[in-house]
Structures are given as C-alpha cells and as structure tokens.
Length: 198
Image 1: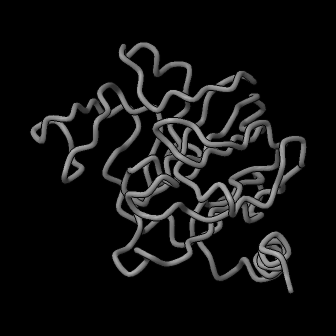
Image 2: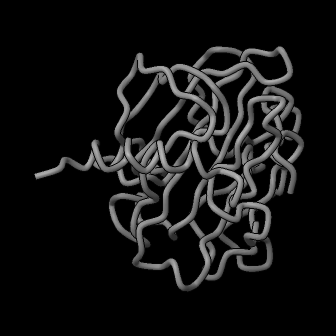
Image 3: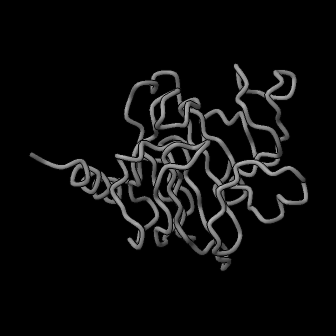
C-alpha cells in the first residue's frame, strides 16, 4: 500500500515537471502560487483589512470570531472544491520550522524563506495536519506540495471555513498571529499580494 506521504511526493514531482499549466508565480525570483488558480480565487480577507464579528465589519458570511487588522491574505476555495482535496504549495524555497495544530488555524505549517533578500517566515493556515508530508528541518523548494487544505468547519480548520490563510512575517521568529490590534503592527508583516500578485 502506498503511503499518503509517497503520494504527495509523487504529486510534487508531477507539479515540478508540469508546472507550466499553473499560475505558478515568478520563477526567476523562486516563487510559486500557494494554490492552483490562486490569482483567480476570491480573496475576501485581504492584508490590513480591519474586521470584527459584526456583519457590518466583516466580509465573511457568517462572520468569524476574530477582531483586528488581518495580517495575511486569505485565498478562498471555489464552490466545487468544498469536500475535495485541495493541494497547498510552498511559495518559496526554505526550511520547515513549524508544523502542528494551532488554535484559530487548525493545521498550521511555517517555513523560513528569503524574499527579496529579506529573511521571513511564511505561515500556511487551515491545513489538514495529517496530510502534511514534511517535518521540521526539511528543506522545501517553491512549488512542492505541503499538504491539503483542511475540511470546511472541522477541527482541521479550527472550525473555520475551508480556505488558505497565507501570512508572511519579517524575520525568523515564529509568528502565529493572524490579526493584530494596532495598524502599526502590520509593519512586521508583508502583504502576500505584493510578493505573489493578486
């Protein structure tokens, strides 16, 4: 019987060989989009958007429980992907520094990379933790499959909707905050849209 890890590694090989069919990002800069068709996906929670659980201040329906300035970019799933396996890809080359369940995210994966000659950590939130085929210390290349998005409104996503929360934090510290309370705190993060396009 073939293990889930073996299947994901084979899928990565297929991706690397056939990546021309995806909106892969800027290859010259060693970047890759985090999801298939990332550029055409809805992005309801953008970087820096201030939200509360009040429907008047939150584009998510129904609103989620978080408040503050969003320190990441959320990539929504297409309706036909609900209940389906959706691969998450590394956006850059770098070492895995965190891979475990985190409150508010469910499955959480962080890699350390260099983007525009700056050390950063990249957080991929709301993953199916059991699908992650890499361990802390592993080196990833941009475009490698990390794992799968967690299922909609389950423990895999910490009861959130099925989507990818992608955060980029300046420096090498592991930063789990998806929201900050003061707008000035956003300066410690990078808007993923400026790195990968919108």
